[in-house]
Image (cartoon, rainbow, N blue to C red; front, side, top):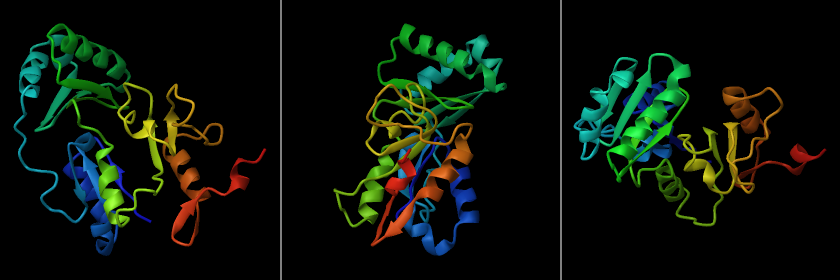
Length: 222
């Protein structure tokens, strides 16, 4: 199997995965950093890049947000070339901070950016940046087979969740929040199971045969 990771984080993910995964497998594990702004294999020391200079128009938006007391006094602001992350000091403030950031984007006419939110942050990305960037690397490692179904698992599948791009594809499962679309982004975890527990449950149900992984039909009986 080819297993890829799409994350809003950067170099810290590369470090932590390398500490837990045998080095012989690094060249077979695609990683999409900063919500897909940069993508490559885990063995690539050049990714994510070292340049933290914000691209236009993220640099202008950073200046605007930094001068907004209702955001700057309650949040840490982290910058990467292709991503601006606003991290509230208290997690329960994420929805309100997202609404404030979104209103600034709309009011000041920023057309080339969008704001998504995770459990702990609001990530501002250039239009076109998407966690779906990991798909191309997965297919390349799977010998270019375009017919392969890619199982996608995330937690925030409903816009403006930061997994909405990933979980709008067929064969997608959520470990928490689902979308309104009936054909994908299902949550099939046991009642009360979410996040890591739900992920472990999903992976534990997979069976393997002849180079493919699948959920057996008995998982969905009754």
